[in-house]
Length: 113
Image (cartoon, rainbow, N blue to C red; front, side, top):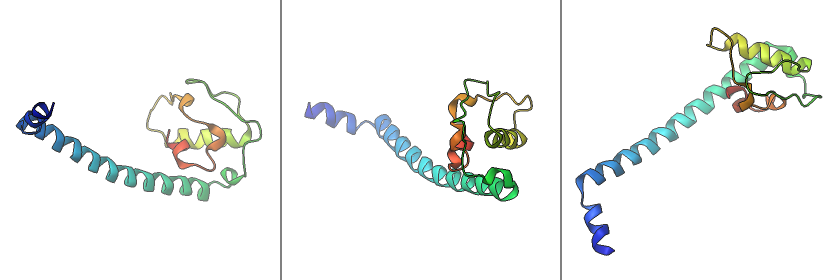
């Protein structure tokens, strides 16, 4: 077992994989901080520029399934409208099932999803 480990750790190809994995972790950490900051800024921008979004919370516990998100309370409906206004998909086809609309007012990552 020890000799197998020694052979593997001295293999140049394996060392390159280890280095690549380490670099990917560092890049991920930096990108995560950057994306978190940008999403928080965007979330605050939406809240600052649309007073309807500043309401406290969803009262209907709105839910979305797949690409369907038809009936929503006025708060979630306004969040949906804002998300669609800033979305890059020109057909406005969004997979809403990944997010929880009642959490949009509080959590930037729910908007990002």
